[in-house]
Image (cartoon, rainbow, N blue to C red; front, side):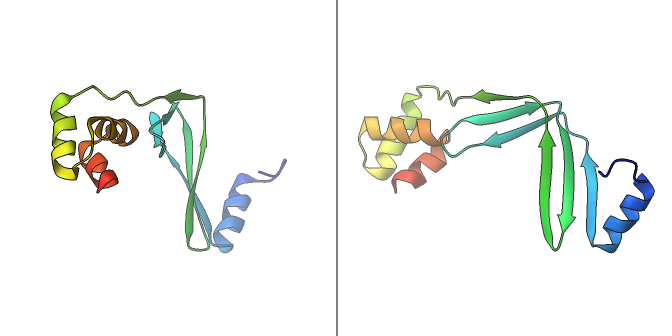
Length: 109
């Protein structure tokens, strides 16, 4: 915001420019990364911004990283091996990477 600007005038100006923003009351934001890690933001401040047909989110708060911990499920690994014809090591690696049985099968298919 511009220092000393009237918030109502700023909202009106943004509306004229086709910009809208809404606060989203969230207790946690979780971003699941492709490498299996999860970025967790507890008690975040989240603003949803719509501008020129695009939607974006502004998230502020303290973050932390969680790494994927896949249980060594022999049954899941056996299913992946059966469906894809891969080795036990390949099945376990795909399961650790995706964190999901179906995604691991798709990864190896």
